[in-house]
Structures are given as structure tokens and as C-alpha cells.
Length: 165
Image 1 (tube, helix red, strand yellow):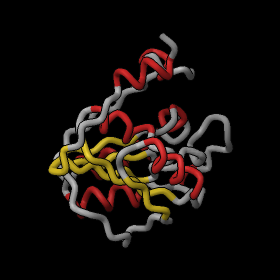
Image 2: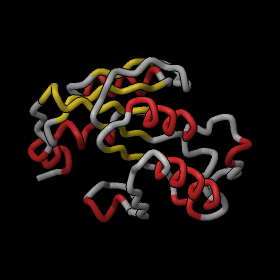
Image 3: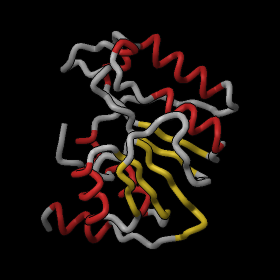
Image 4: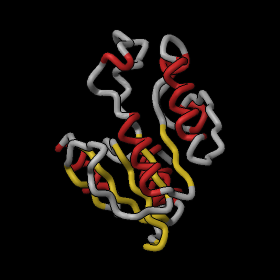
């Protein structure tokens, strides 16, 4: 069985509209795909038109093309997921952190504070654990102050049968 056949057999979405997941900085929907496979309805927000088109073509949920801000209207949701832009923290880049205008963590934290979901999840690059570790500490402290228990893990996608390292 090839990879496409395998994921199509394993990831069969069955929607439950009471379990809405909003996906901030959704990209083409990689995080949403896993939640849909577990029966969640997803709604993505992404600024890149091509990413939104890919999300809308391949997932059951909907993706809206929008540049997110702390004032963006969001639907109530039990779960917030997202991949704030990683360029400010990537070891392959300049690691400007807060000096990079693409930092999306304030928007993500604001959404969690406003919507108070049961759970939230964000993913980013390992570079956030090095030169900008102090910033990851600030992010986790901000989310802990909202009453959440935080667990940080460095994972490699290849260890979960994803064809990338």
C-alpha cells in the first residue's frame, strides 16, 4: 500500500459539528487533517490564497483567507490549533524572533484568552527551543496564567510515518 492509499484508509473524517476546531495560521491544513480524522469539524484561517485553496479542496472543513490580527472575529470553539509562522524562529533563517513582523504568537495567545477553549495546540520549529527559548518561556507563562497546563515536546514527523524529516 502506498502512502496516499494508507492515509486515505486511515484518515476517514466523520464530522461532529459540536466539536469545532479552529485552525489559526492553518496553512494547507495539516493539523486540521488529524483532527478531522478524529471526528472534529474544522475551520481554518490562513492569509495565503494557495494554502486556503489546498485546504478547501482536500479537507471537509472550510478555510477563510484572512490576515489574522488580535481583533479577528472567531467562532466559539472547544479547540484551537495552529502553526504561527515559524520564520522568526527557524534555524534555517535569521532567528529574529520578536524583531520579525511575522510573529503570530500574540494573536494565538489572544485567541485562547478570548475563546477559552477546552484545549489548544500549536506547532512550530525546533529553533524556538534554542536562540529564542526565552520567548517560548514567555509564551508558556502567558498560557499558564490563563489556567492551562503546558507540555512542550520536540517531535520529529518522520517518527510518526510522515514523509519528511
